[in-house]
Length: 106
Image 1 (cartoon, helix red, strand yellow):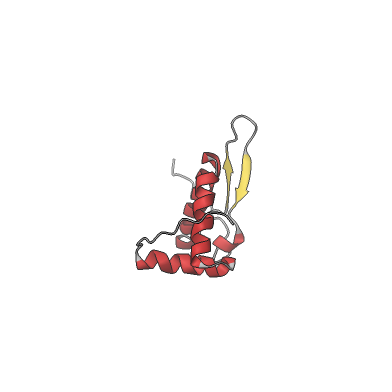
Image 2 (cartoon, helix red, strand yellow):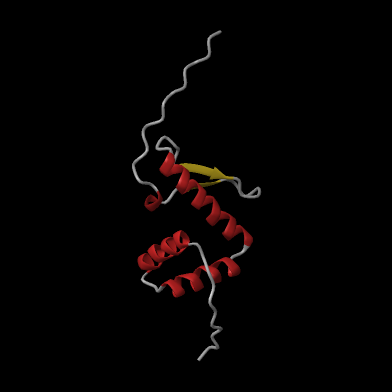
């Protein structure tokens, strides 16, 4: 069996509640969710971690602003752009059609 380091630490109760919700969604214990997230953050390359952060921020923005566009393009280091769509589970409602901006007066 793998050696296990036992620890006890404190976290804000609100953070614990969020962690518990995510653990339930993933079918894991809170400890299992915490270990999985720590491993993911420590093992992920910086690009993966940055992209995960971008999706997290875009998901929160989409919840606050239903008019937000749900696709965007990422420059890919000279290999051509990548079009990315915000995953459905991060979007609470379907986007409204884009509105045309009024033409400036001459």
